[in-house]
Every structure is written in C-alpha cells, then in structure tokens.
Image (cartoon, rainbow, N blue to C red):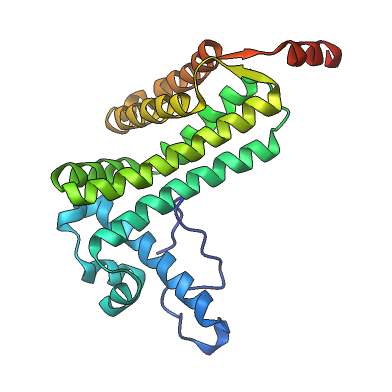
Length: 239
C-alpha cells in the first residue's frame, strides 16, 4: 500500500517492511521516527475504517508492517496513538498554511480567500479519511472525559497556531482585524469542520460546497478585516 494522505511524508527511501535492512543506513533516531510515522499513518487508516473502539492494535501494526511490540515501544496506549493521529493531522494543515503564506505573502485579500478555499478543497475535503477521523476522535472524547481533556489541549494549541497565521497575514498585508485573531481562528475552524462534514455526506453537492467555502472565507474577511490607511496608500501606488 502506498500512503498518499496528508498525514505522512515518508520518502521513497523507506518502506514499512524494511526498517531493519542495512541498506537503509538509518540512524536509530531516524528509524524510530519513520516507524512512528508509519504507525500513525496506519492508525489513521484503521481508525477511519473501523472506528476507535473497533480498531485493534494488531491490525494497525499489520497495516504498518510491524509487530504489535512496535506500537508499545512507541506509544503508551491506543489513546496515545489516537492523539498522535490528531496532532499529525493538525501539523499537516499548519504546514500547508505556512507554505501558502510563504508563497503568497503579497497576495490580496481576495487572493487569500481563494487560496484558503483551495486548501480546504485539496487537503481537507480531498482526503476521505479526515471526516471519519474528526468525528471519531470527537465522539470518543465526549464519552471519555479524561481523554477529552487531552484532546481539548491539543485542539486549543492548533487553533492558537491558526490565530498566529492570521496575525502574520494581517500584519503582512497591513490589515486591521475587527475581532481578535483568536476568535477569527475559532470561527474559521468551526465553520470549515461543519462544511467538511456536510460535504462528506452529500457528495453530489461537492462543487457547491467548494463555492460555499470560498464565499465563507471572502465574507469572513470582508466582515472582520479592514485595510489600514498605510495599506490602502500602498495599494494605490502599486496600481
């Protein structure tokens, strides 16, 4: 199986089934990193297909190409593995945001809303495992208060990182936020999660949801962001 979802960036030099082969010449640290990555990717696949409760560590290890002992040597429990899946999912999205920012630092407000919609379409709606995983770990958290506390902390950190990106974008473009970056990040995260779940169920309306997401980002920027006098003057000079 070749992993293609946004969670994993294992290079062609590595196979799940040949971590121990001398030809790889991997350091112990690098081998451990790749093993953990393969296990997390396999867990994402199995959790999405069978649910958290229905997923077995044996199947996850088998999909990854390892024994169950590899899971125990890298993760303390199945819950730890689930949190690792959540964290990798969040980091992949944050990396995509950062890449877009680096490539489009001088983009206009309208261009930014279009880019955000493309990210949603290609990375979030484009990965069929994401909605089952999102629903699965939230449902499990609702039924298990101790895990809920851990998940809340991870998700708060994720939204805080989104807020940091919003601040960077607004500062770069010379824009003034009408609400806090933290509030805007929460609204954006909640709205895109909801639209993603709806689009995953009503697949015949996928293109319509693409348009709705783009409209959402455009309207959000119009409603919550305004240009400063300096940025307006700069745009006139460039024009």
